[in-house]
Length: 281
Ligand code: DGL
Image (cartoon, rainbow, N blue to C red; front, side, top):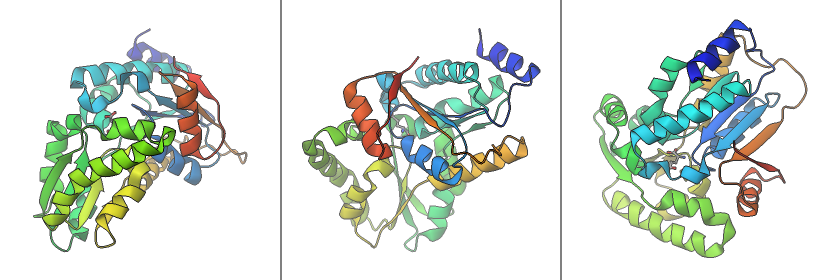
């Protein structure tokens, strides 16, 4: 079945009901930073989380590859009756969300870096955005920076190697030391330049916000996007009359394309609850 057929059959059978799950997608565990916020603010919604860890990091992949992966997972979500899809990955949002929205009719919510609020908050008018390589090179992302920088000087800082370390961070304390060293390499030049506001433009980076705060100190504001994404999801669900009115707590089901005991331990550590990780597909 193609993605277009799947979505039209779903719509024609009026299957998109408010009890259906919200699908959340990332290349790995980064999207859990968004899923946590959704679960906290919409506690009666059922969530379906897919990490495409087998193909991560997306930051090193081509736009065509990322589009193909997102479409494949979106088709699976639709087959699993998702009522909306949250692309909880900045790299997949800028590289693949527009073409997905053209193909399917359920709401698709993406992650946009908080450039506009950062530019209005910065006293020095110097902000930085930490992103993956595939985001840094993306014309849609560069357009957003130009549109919302509001006369602030914006430094786009790609962070190669960081997503890979974050995917391993809970397995070994040594990775946390390595992660802090790599972050220092990326952050110290920004601080020396007078940057006072840093936007986390990859959903993996909030998972190391403690390390980022340690390096930057209190004078630098760190901005992330989990809350605005959750609010946008809530607005879209309300608009399509898809908010779950059940008064029961929702469930969250986790899948990874690279299923292993280590992955399950990593998911449980970040989610702060024991959980069963299932194999995608
Ligand atoms: N969490 C993804 C993002 O927000 C990470 C991309 C990657 O896998 O490199 O961009």
